[in-house]
Length: 73
Image (cartoon, rainbow, N blue to C red):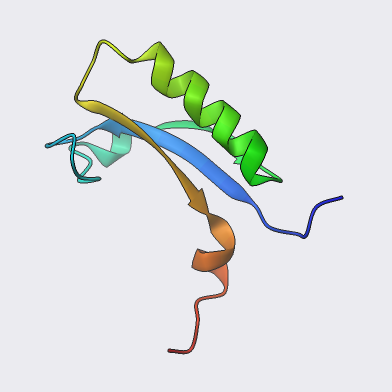
């Protein structure tokens, strides 16, 4: 059973591999949306390993709850 959270996995070319400054957002690769962090992490790992020879491509996991229900702080 899940707690209702959703996780987005996506990636693309970055200007610096130490950042998440994506160069061309219209060419981002959406891996998918997952109901658990464990599933998202598995998808992230697969996508990242497939691009291991390209240091300028980065994949990330984003918790959609944090975007859909931001804190009031």
